[in-house]
Length: 83
Image 1 (cartoon, helix red, strand yellow):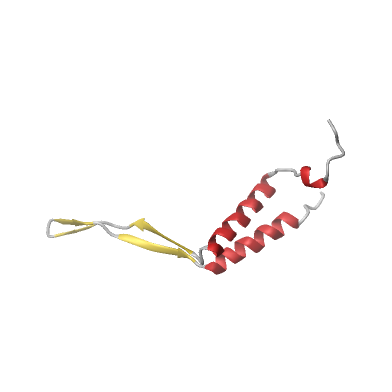
Image 2: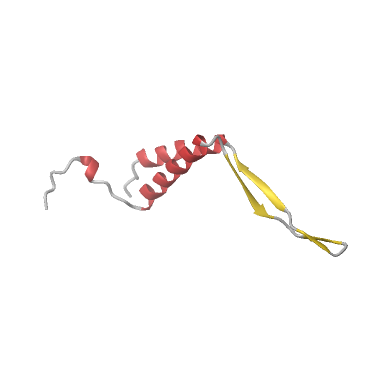
């Protein structure tokens, strides 16, 4: 096998690299959509024999997306210390 490949092809896909790429991707998605909103099922209400379903709204602000993006880039660029 040829070991003279450019450094771009010699990427070690360890846990740190995968986690940093995941953070960068999620940060870009959150920033692209100016924050994400999602709903989860809430506690159902029984009132006078009626069953009423509720939902809770949650949101991820764009600042969290920016922090994920910066954190992923820093994690990708920082070299581990040798022990």
